[in-house]
Length: 209
Length: 209
DNA sequence: ACGGACATACCGACCAGTTGGTATGCATCC
DNA sequence: GGATGCATACCAACTGGTCGGTATGTCCGT
Image 1: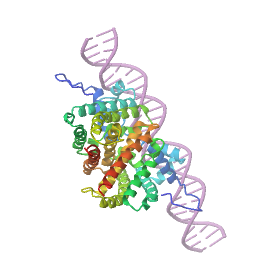
Image 2: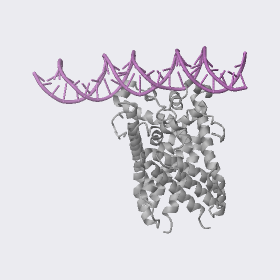
Image 3: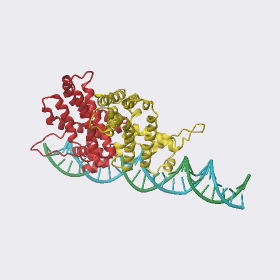
Image 4: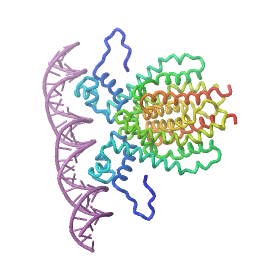
């Protein structure tokens, strides 16, 4: 999403504006508490435009998860930690980047997919599946490097995808705790949690080499 | 909450029924998507009864976090893992108990406070604070044993409360991932995550003794 | 002139919250 | 011990406003 369109006017269509507004509002208040009218107001478009692009509010939810997945996926894919020679450095580099992103209030660094899926996992299977794709997409992107790093270590009986999923679990859990404490301490608390994750990975991947 | 009242008819007042319904509905659909009418229907009481006991829907949310905190707190306080002589066994015993509780669909083992705070942390500071009390209450209950276990190990520069918080973060993150995959795999995925937490604690607390 | 991209106006359903009321229990006073 | 007074617990019916969604129209590039 948001394709690079150099030398061309950015589309900023009503659809894009609605998705951007969706990211902001869902992060701040969740999916259910965000009304279609509110989305239209925040995006500066009318209700007619909304239902021209999305068949329903649920359809926006699904599209939002996809939009979120694409934009964050592109960001992490372009990050420099991929160029490290040692796969362990690539894995820890990913965690370090996630730590570096933790700043400001919780609604500025939390995950749209994780927030949405908590509310909609039972009421809308389409949204649940779209959010699952987003989260497991992150795991799969990390899995390659974890797998290579595990092969170097003497660790036995550990699955790469399970470890990659653990990174996502800790990240999602850190967001929940950050929202709970609120205020200034949110980012610091989240960072503390990712440092535990980093230590765990370091213990596993650098053991007995 | 729900005091033992042997030989007396259980109160099952409208208030208690509403809180029980709140636990169920918030787990299934979140706080915002749960309407007052729905709560009353599920509890088998009228709307008048609701607003007799709670000044607003938000007030129910705050009371619900307290109710959740008390009932789960009492459960864990009474668990047998506290009797282990070695503090490391008590910490790992807590994690093992949490693993044992993971069964069935996500809505049957997920956390009411964690779900609510994701939606309401900005819109209602009262709910945010009540949920934070519930989650940090769990951390503080674990902190004592973690502190004693850390004192035995040769680990340096690790704070007990930070580690106890990490347990809560992994648990909350496991719930998010479990909701995302949905269906039969939910509990298994959550268990997998808590096993990583267990391994991390084991690596830290049993190191170089 | 035709289709995509919007805007305006509106609908029935449902929302949180309010109203005025009833039923019951428990003191207090004669 | 029976009448009085008052609080608690609960109820059915209602309100103004907001919800997701629709019907219909207009603009505009091709």
